[in-house]
Amino acid sequence: MKKILGIDVGGTKIVYAMINENGNFLTTPEKTSTPKNIEELISLFKNIITKHENDIDITAFATAGAVNIENTRVDSSTPNLPTGYNSIDFSTLSKKPVFVENDANAAAWAEFKVGAAIGENNTITITLGTGVGGGFIVDGKLLRGKSGRAGEVGSMKIQGRGRVCTCNRKDCFESYSSGTGLKKTAEELALTSKYFKESIYKDKTPKNITTYDIINGLKNNDEYSKAVFETWKNDLVVGLINITNIFDPESIIISGGMGEFINTEEMENKINSEIVVSPVKIKLAKAGNYSGMIGAALLASEKY
Ligand SMILES: [Zn+2]
Image (tube, rainbow, N blue to C red; front, top):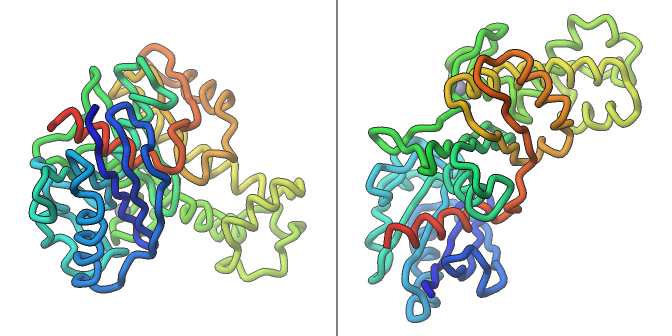
């Protein structure tokens, strides 16, 4: 039985644990905050690996950012991680094999192998958080593309309302369908919706209405909050219809913080009424908070 050291690298924290090739934890996940400079980050990686190196066969990283086709480096810009992160050759961090995968791709693999999409050879996991990430399993394989960057669904362009994304392009899917997108929609509707002047937030500056406010407003039956959430869901459905028509998946798995507010059955009906392929199932993720780390470990154990 192979033992893998899984390391999940996020902008604020790094989590690691030993995992076996079935995706089960052999040690309790440990957490530490992400260093702000690159030297500290590299020495943290080396310390974690050295501590476990004698007991493991492979180290598997799940990380933000697009990973190269060789699974050794991060290619794209990763604003939440220290400058120089892209220059790390992960394969040099250990005497044993090191594998790196994009966290959304890894999470999709975990859902496919041990989560909500077991046995479904065509399944897509969409992570709705600060941004929108995607991992595509096509015919039982992780879709990686020519450069390893396939599945950047957050940057898919939709017919939007001219919204400027954090990447400075207009109308990226994630500028609407992320948690941040919900906040933007709230600002937009505060200026245009007839419900705003009767809303519990009518005295707030539109720019200062938060994602949390809208979720809270839903619980309090606030019509404006309901309109905001409805618009957010409709934008999300547009993206999911496109994805479904192109990939003909058995399921789309919704992962990330926004998932819990979605009625999957309602969303499934909306999508299935507008597609030309056979119906898709919409489900919530099951592989849990550590799905990136588990998926990276499982992918690594297939490669080495
Ligand atoms: Zn963008």
